[in-house]
Image (cartoon, rainbow, N blue to C red; front, side, top):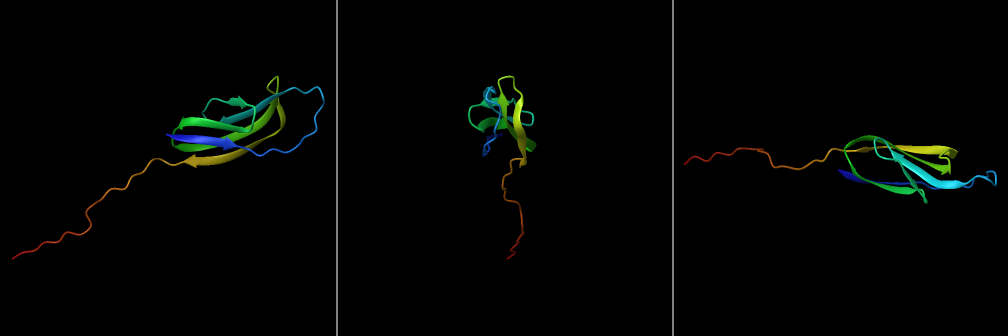
Amino acid sequence: MSTVIVSASVKDLVVKADVVVQGYKVSVTGQPEQVVPTPTATFNDVAPGDYVATVVLVDAAGAAIGDPQSASFTIAAPTQTVSVVDVVTVAVS
């Protein structure tokens, strides 16, 4: 299992003065969404597989402000290195 940290950069967007910002909705495929005050969130115990992380600013009703931005990523299955037989040598005397 892996820890996934999703971060996004931000840019300015002009919106109406009455828009109430709730925070950034951060999601990773198959994980519970998080609404956080900054565009960074941590997801723990994520299994190997293919995922999409998405971040979008949302208002108090949960509606998107601006376009969501996404990135795909893969968590590889755990591996290990083992010693296997390579060459057999026999000595006879």
